[in-house]
Length: 427
Ligand code: CMC
Image (cartoon, rainbow, N blue to C red):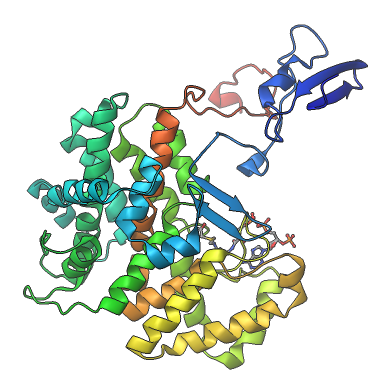
């Protein structure tokens, strides 16, 4: 018998089955041969929240949650954060290799050429209420882009997919900045194609009357944050992009689904939730009472814990360093003091230690964004800008993977058996 197999005995029938093991994994569909009767559906696995189910084979991002390792296409995240630009990392994720100077030039120029959005986009953004959440605006606007580019439906043409990738990379910062200006009642600032990707975005958000003095430390810090968020393998929003994209829909609609998933407080919305939590705590003196409430199950310590990282989140370490650089530039944020003390107390508390709960990427990112001048409800928009290359890379991988089909999980039906309809007067 081959050693790389799993032998299963079904005690209901006494039958034995040998299932091949590849990459430490068995195929769930191999279990279907395990039946009691010939007309059985066959054995399934039950895995709510996909705790132990691989839905794809991927070459994009490697994470070892126990060791705190994160690599994009094999390159350690700290090397990329320290030495790379966001567009270079985006190219790496989407195309699979670091670009040559010539490839990076073309990628950058293609994106620069597509930064403008159709003026009708402005018209419907103006229809949002003054206090509309920018994530709601962003996901609506990105979904609506599919109506401007019906050619994007041709998802099986590689050249077509390239142009849609470029459009999304180019237009997301423009739309994101328009959402920012909308909530502040400021006129929209159009793209400046003499600036680089980050510089143009910052200019579109903060420029007043065409004037903005760029701060290179803050711009580089923003770039590092975007790099750190650029991909994280099969997280909730990426799985949403893949699942929705598996129906064959255009990438604008699929990415819009990713933005919707990211909006949730347990995912990208956590950085926003951290700031609200720090506001609620208020002062260092209130921290012990807050921790006790969390331990009683009355709320969570936002910015702590992760489904895969169980020793530390390597991004959190890099973000803390970035926070030091930003605060040296902007002055100390009083909330930072509360955050540092909260982290210290939680890391010494057995509740958090025993559950392997450590600060995640969102614990400090919100504080940095706030110091840069972004309002709390805008943080997840910044996360979306960072995550876009990951969504695009994963969508591309899904579309070109011959093994993928439309995503369609199974269920265990536990409802009523067949019963006869009861007329309303007899109920
Ligand atoms: N505060 C207090 N307790 C927690 C926390 C927390 N932040 N996270 C997990 N726990 C407890 C949880 O109550 C459970 O305890 P018990 O075993 O006694 O029932 C145990 O730890 C395991 O939790 P879980 O909910 O089974 O873990 P999960 O892997 O499903 O959740 C998580 C991962 C990130 C959703 C969760 O840790 C959480 O809600 N964290 C706060 C929100 C947050 O910071 N999210 C950002 C994640 S990183 C950025 C991103 O991916 O978007």
